[in-house]
Each structure stands twice: as structure tokens, then as C-alpha cells.
Image (cartoon, rainbow, N blue to C red):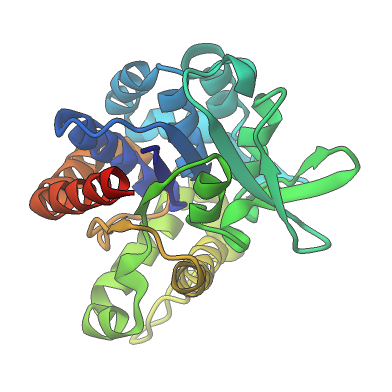
Length: 306
């Protein structure tokens, strides 16, 4: 039986994938294929390359100021950050050069900006595949590949269960980082979500020493709520879109097991919280440990009977 792991999109929340993978391994779950979207592709490719420990150590060391520098916040054509240092670090230290050199089969998904089609990468050079899969609209510029402009795969396929099956998985474990954006939860935790989204504007303000605030996030007027800045509008809109697309895709192609860590207090760009997020991911697997073992045992028994 081949086990596939579909790692979902979610920007900084994706560091929880590290803890999830570690917990599954501790349980003795052998992951045979991986598919990732956005940060899921960033972490998944490191795991498939046998370099998850290196990524874990580096991510835990990041401070808020280091994240500012790595993202390269500023006016760019197509986005407000370059992210080049983040992807260079990934290329050099955390990933094989090609898909074929990885320890286990891996696929990443992106979105064609103009046709809206899902674009799948599973062979050849991997550098541009990861950049394209992680190209969050408005934050990072689109990536040109073979005459197409590509953006974040979360626009069309935030949790690529289908790609795990394409790689030959018989049993798919999926990780959804958008569970907190179900309608009933948004209503219940509306204030928490508002505070969480505001963190993104505050992050950008700090990174630019008030410059972005001057243009995109005006000072609040007396007795009025502060108007959301461009980044909080973008991040909140994307999270709503991603949550809806995720529910639709998972309903049409459900995984055999779904892991949904609770991450509603994490801002889009809080990459400096990696150790905490990995711990949340680890705990989410521990809560499902008995269910995971039971479902895998059932699957093995069915295969033996056949």
C-alpha cells in the first residue's frame, strides 16, 4: 500500500506541516509520495529531498526581523515582495535540484494566471516549480514558465489530493490549513480573525518603517475603526477564497484521512513562529493517532483480503 501526503497552502501556517510529518513518522507511517501547494510545496519538497531536519532547524531560528529581510518587502512589479532570498535558501540548502533526484516522488501545483488552469510540476528542474507554487497573488510576482505566467496553486487546488493519487497513492492523508475559515467558525471567532488579519498590516508597516502605512493603511480617525490596509484585504480575501475552494475540492475528491490543525491566531506572514506552529501540527496528529492507526489497519486488511 502506497501512502500519499497532500500538504495544503497557508503561508506561515505551513510550518505546521513540519510537526505533522514528524508525528506521522514517529507513529511508523511510511509516506511514499508527496504533493504540495504553496508553503506545502516548500516544506514537502524538503521532506521528499530528505532535508526536512535542515529546514526545521533553519525555520526555528528565524526572527521577525530576519523574515523582513528574507521576504524583501518593497514595491515590485507584480507583487510587494521579491522573496528571492527565501527561494535561494530553499534551492541551496533544502531541496534536490530536480524531481528525479528526490528520495520519494513529489508534485507541486501552481495556477496559470490567464487561463485559470491547474499547472502540475513533477519532473525536471524544481526551482521555478516551488517559486510558482508559492507565488501568493499581490505578495509575490508571478513566475514565467514556458510562456505562461504562474501564481500560487491555492487559487485552484489548495490541498492537492488528486496529485497524490496521480503519483500512485492508495491511501491519501491530507492537511488542510484553512479549517478555521469555515462559515460557522468565522462567525464564532470573528474578532479573533479580525485581529489576526490586522497582524499582516502591522508586519508590513514594521518592514517598511511606516512607508507602506502612509500609502495603503491610513491612520485611524477618532472613534472609528482603522481601515484595513492592502495586505490585510488581500490576505483575508485569499483565505476566504482558499477555504471555499478547499471545501469544494475535498468534497469532490476526499482524502482517506484529513488533518486540520487549529491555527486561527496565526497571521499570513508570521514565519518567525515556526517552532510554535510545528508544535501545533504535531499535536493535531497526536489527537488523531488512534483514528490514523485504525484506518490504516482497515486499509491493510482490505488489501490482504483482495
